[in-house]
Every structure is written in C-alpha cells, then in structure tokens.
Image (tube, rainbow, N blue to C red; front, side, top):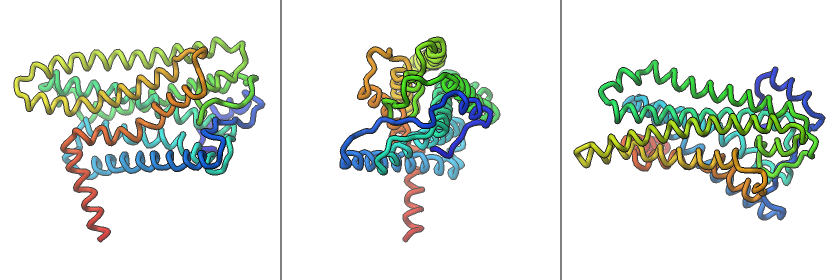
Length: 324
C-alpha cells in the first residue's frame, strides 16, 4: 500500500503536518510460527474475498437476466468490498511474512484515505440498497418509475461520492494534527482512532469532530435502515401467499445480515471510549468490520438467492469445461 496515494494536494498538506516518517503497526504474534500462521490465515481470507466477489461481479456482468437495480447495487458492493480488503490485508500479510511492523507516513495516509473511502461508500450503498428493497416491496407499482437506470446510477454515484468526501475530510483532519505520542499503533492497519491516540493532547477538538461526524453518518444510515426494514417487514407479513413471503424475505434477509454485521462492528470501532480500549479488543473489532464482511458478503448473498446461485453454478461449470 505504500505506493497508493490519495489526491496530490491532500498528500502535500499531510506530508508537512508531522516530522514522523513512518509508523509501526501491531504485530499479531511475536514468534515466527504464529506470524506465518497469520500470513496463511489472512491469505486464505483474502483469496476467498477475491474469488467470491470476483465471481459475483463476473456473473452479474455476463448474465443479462441479472441486469436489474438490485444486482447493479450488489455489483457495486462487491467492488467496494474488493477495494476495502485490498487496502488493509495485503500490507498486514507482507509485514507478517517479512517480520516487520513498518509502514511509511505516505503509505499510512494512503491506507487511511482509501479505507475510509471504501468503508464510507459501503455504508451509504447499504442504505441505498435498503431503499431499493423498500420500494420493491412496499411500493411495487412505482418501482419501475422510481428505480430506473438513471436513478440507479445517480444513487450509486452519490454513495461513492459521499465516501470520497468523507475520506478527504477525515484524512485531512487526522494528518494535519501533530503526532507527539510516538509512532506505534495498536492495530494491524492505519486506523483513524489509533492515529488520534498518537496526536498531541491539545487536539481534542479534532478528535471530537471525528467522533461527531462518524456518529452522525453511522446513526443516520442506521436509522434509515431500521425505518426501511420496519416498513418492509410490515408489508411482507401482509402478503397472503407463503411463497410470496418467502421470496420477499430471501431478498431482504441477506442484506439485513450484512448491514447488522458491518454497521454494528464499525460503530463499535469508531465510537467506543478510549478508556475501555485494549489492543486485543481493538484488533478483534477491526477484523470484524474490516476483514470479515468482504469475505462473507458473497456467501451471504448467494446462499438465499436462487437466480444468483444458478448463474454462479453455470459460470463455474463453463470455466471447468473450458479447462478440460
């Protein structure tokens, strides 16, 4: 990740904000055997995320039956998951493999920018996907007019754009603070709350700003999601046929599981008080919201979606037969 950079102007501002040239990330283990175990474990998770999300992207792109708003948003979610896990896991794997903890200042700032970009975009996109399910189930007669191709592109662009603005805001805010508490972080990647722990004690206003903005974004998305699913479940329970209720639940439950895992762990990481923070707890929470969702999302969405399962099965079979 040391070679990936955010906007040039932002980098120039951040490079002048501190005399620190590198940071030290948290090592998963002290012994060489456990370091290699961490490498192979993260490699397996990373390959699973690449395979699962890659198959979903390929299936949706190749099958014209899946060219619908729901699958368009799912394709965007898979792209975001690929970007998110690629921002953090490869660097951690490299450090474990080469027995080092170092990440450069520019690499750390780039990692913060891209991770915030993808995570924020995912939060907004999950909210958009909840709105899509709400209109499809609660207002089916208006679905074609409200969720047309132009509206899908606009909503997806708004999710990506909101993530970009959030990343610029928090990255600039974080790296414009002088660091005077050392350069060692209790995390396996550059995380804003961990970086704020290293800042000088008189920068409490910016620390509070990060917490307030994070709280507003997370709570706003969470409130919209809760209200949407209250209306969705009320509408589903009024469907007379059991088959209709099953079909409605099969499209909503995977999204609800993904939302619950992502937002709950993300809010816990960003909003937990520093007083109860510990390296072990911070590490567990970070793995839950930064590593697990990108690997599990493809499995969650494909388990209860017959159309997607059929397309993935045909895709895998075609690939196997081509090799033979």
